[in-house]
Length: 484
Ligand code: AMP
Image (tube, rainbow, N blue to C red):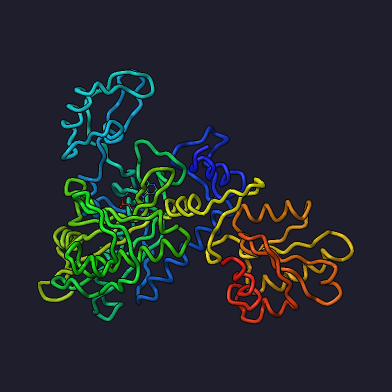
C-alpha cells in the first residue's frame, strides 16, 4: 500500500474522515470530517488563527453564497475555469491538463485549441474506455445557484467576501495599513476529477488571509531569515536559503517573503516535516488571472509535490475591479488602492500532509502518528490498568478533573492495556495516563509517551492540573523530554 492509501485507510477505520454519502454509493470529492478529523481540523485552524491574530490580524466570516455580479467583477465568471474534454464514447469528462501532463507535456497558454493539438498529435485516448475525445472546451469551476432574485454561485474562494468589505474593515482597523484580514470557511469548486480524499474535493475548508499594503511600499514586513527553506524559482532553479536573503537577492519582495516565512512556520508547527516542504514559483503562464506573482508551498505526499498553500501577490486587481463595477470608493487614500498579498491554504490538504508525514511504522505492527502535542485530536487518554478493584472509578475521577481544563481528552477501559495504548498511538495521542494499584494507595500514576512508549511515574494529579493547561503542566513537560 502506498503512503496515501495507508493513511486514507487509517483515517477511515479510526474516524478521521469518511467518504460522504457512502451508503448511496459515495460521490467523489465530498468527504465527512469524522470525530477525530473534526478535532484535528479545529486544532489546525486554531494554530493558524492564533498566528494571524498575533500579527494584529482581524477575522471576517462572510457568506458562502455569492451574487453573480461580485464574481463577474472579480473575473471568476469569465475566467475561473479548467480546460476539459469529454469522451465521445463513454461521456466521462477529463481535465485536459492531467491527460497531457501524464505524458510530460504542457499547453503553453492553457488554451483549448492547444490541448486539441496535443491530444490529437499524441494520440491520447480516454483512460476509461479507450474512446476518442471531442473538442476541448473551457469548463467553469463554480457551482451555480438559481436564486429567486438572480444568479448566485457557491464561493470558489473566501477572498471576495473580504475584498468587498474593504471599507468596513479599513474603518474598523482605524484607517491603518498594513491590515491583515483572515477568514476560515469553505470554498466550492466543481472539480472535473475530484480524487485522493481531501486533496481534491468539491468543497473544502480554506484558511485565507488578505494582507492589505500601501500601494507603493514593498517592505511593510521584513522576514526574520531564521529558517532555511527550498525555493524553486520559475526558471526551475533551486535555492536553499532563508527568506530574508531571498528577498535581499531580489527573488521576491520583502513583504511577500515575510508571508512565505509565516506560512512555513505554520506548516511545520502543525506537524508537516521540513524535508517534505518546498516553495515553488508559478510560471508566468500558470498564474491565476488576478495574480502577478505566486509562490506555492508544496508538501511531498506519496511521491508527488502537492500545493497546500498559494501565496499570491494579487496587486491591486480585486479592489480595483470592485471599484470599477460598483462605482463605490475602494481607496485607502486619495487615488490610492491597496495592494494585496494573499496566503491561501487548504485545510484538507494540510491535514493530508500532516497525516502522511507523521505516520510511523513500528516493527510490532503497532503504528503511530507523530503529531505535535498542539494538534493531536486528543492530548491525553486516561486508562485504568484494569476495570476492577476500584481502578476504573479512580481513573474516571481523574478524567473528570482533566476535562475541566482539557475537555478534548479521552478515556478507555476496554480490552488489554497494550491494545489500548496501541489504539491511542495510532490516532496520535501523545500521552496516556494509567491508573494502577499504587494510585489507589498514594494518588501517583504513570504517564506514557507515545513515540518512545516509555513511562514515568508522577506523584500527584496536581502536577498535571497546576498550570490550567495540560501542555504546560510540569508532568507533561517531564514526559515530553523522553521524546528527545
Ligand atoms: P487556490 O486559490 O487555487 O490557490 O487554492 C488555495 C488553496 O486551496 C490551495 O493551496 C489548496 O490547498 C486548496 N485547494 C484548492 N482547490 C482544492 C480542492 N479542489 N480540494 C481541496 N483543496 C483545494
